[in-house]
Amino acid sequence: MQTNYRKQKCILGIDRGTRYIWLAYALQWSSVIFPIGYILNDKMMYFNIAGIIEKHNVGKIMLGRPSKQKDIQDKIQAFMKSLGYIIENREIEIQLVEEDYTSVQSGEIISNTANDMWFKGDFKKNAAEDTISAMVILERGLKGDELKDDGLKDDE
Image 1 (cartoon, rainbow, N blue to C red):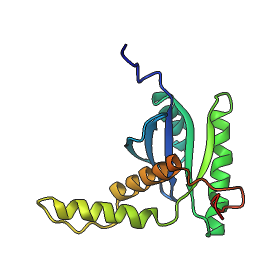
Image 2 (image 1 turned 90 degrees about the vertical axis):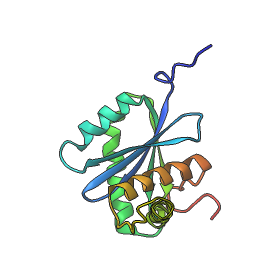
Image 3 (image 1 turned 45 degrees about the horizontal axis):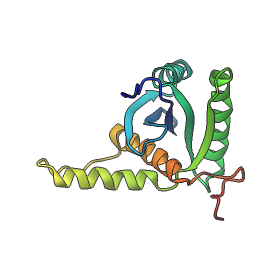
Image 4 (image 1 turned 60 degrees about the vertical axis):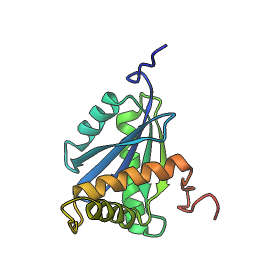
């Protein structure tokens, strides 16, 4: 029997920045993570996110949030609340995931990949790196690194 992947629920990973929002997704019962890329953090952002939720049949959103930066935590909390307006008639759970050092980890992934390839580039922070950060957030969420309401990981 063949599985129809279009009907399976996906998990959407989000790394929110000031100018851009980076996205990645995985099938609900899979550990394989796919990059989506980025969208502008502008007036069309919610329309674009709603389209991605529809296209990928999203059943859960994993939103990255730093565990120690209070000002960014507040912005992520407001963003999470605003996401509620576009998913209010759907059964979509939003989960906060610890995102500390995702940019460092994604930078290492990019640098290692570049060094293994023929062009031996030294990458600077760019859209590819931040898209990988969204993938790392999703990976951490799938492994269970979610945050409690106070911003601490479960084991703290």
